[in-house]
Length: 111
Image 1: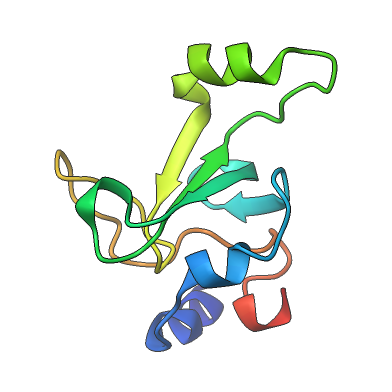
Image 2: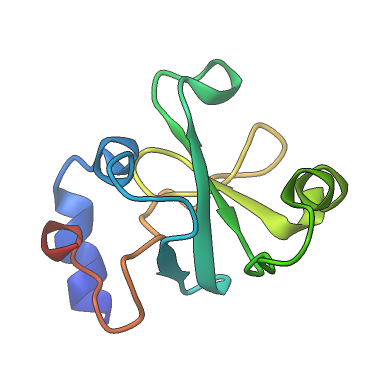
């Protein structure tokens, strides 16, 4: 898996641009969190120069009131930068892509 991750790091990724064309709750994967579901793309999130990719750690149930659940479940959200790294001003970024199409597919060109 390390070779695949290194291959991806060489390219300039723009995951916000790639993921914009996919619907909410598209299943993704991270070695840090396991299965994730796309919650949305925040343009210029937190004053950065790129998109902020927001994912759910747990898939939302269809029967629940999504608005209330999303507001009350901030701990269900994970944030990634455009290059697939994660982190914020309070702790160091992973500095490498840790968001992928799936466990078996670590190549964004095949998404």
